[in-house]
Image 1: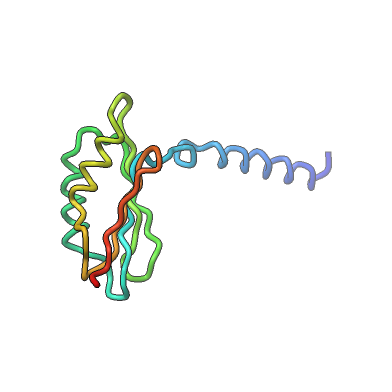
Image 2 (image 1 turned 120 degrees about the vertical axis):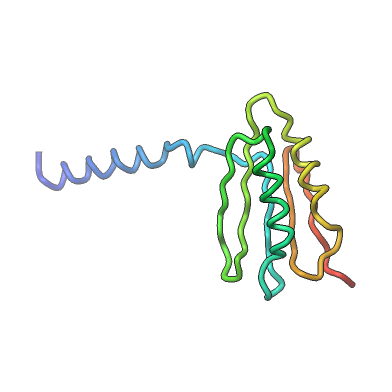
Length: 121
């Protein structure tokens, strides 16, 4: 077997292993998106959500996914087996304001549930 064939085979094995890691297979039951109007996220709201997440026994896994230059991020919440993801969505939706001068925030959940704060008129 040539050296090239050995290297190519090793690369394929590594790619296959990376594609099947548990992290890539995990889906979010509830996702909160903290956006920005150009002045950063709503930090007090994000802190309130963080406190609620830390106390929530229905959550099996939390992942923070940064995506912006002003502190924007998605918060991926995965429910423990047998827990109601729809009820979890409703709990976190209740924390979000209907309107926000500070920054846009949205939440998505199971079965296409979604809600987003509106900019003031």
